[in-house]
Length: 192
Image (cartoon, rainbow, N blue to C red; front, top):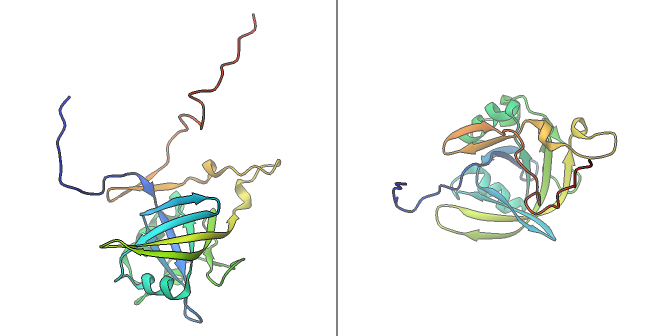
């Protein structure tokens, strides 16, 4: 096997493509597309997003102390891309992309109604890292789309058609290839 060694860079792909909504006071809400996001802690539930300080949304999130992570589906990839390359200084992204603000439950920042999952967050720490600042947000509430709930109350996010971002390109998630713990699960004996 032959391999090449490269200079340091970000090659941890694919990553979730998410649209982060934010709002400052009485101003119009904004959306920034973020590929650098992750689950940071389970108790209390926390997520993190990385944003360049020169981005319009950076100031909004820093000052308001709130943001909403909205998951992106195949149907939202166009809007997600648009919200990542256009600035909220110049355009109203909700209006331009025909997106519907979702009334927040725990703060003042609307989510995106068209997204299957909206994760409302309160900023608990901002860590300057270099080109980006890491915003760590404690999850204050989650809204999920009823279309993906079954009659037993189970949420089926896999049916939403989620999208991921990989080195400048968007992809739909593929087939299920395993589940947590399947590698160590006891196999059932076959009846004869």
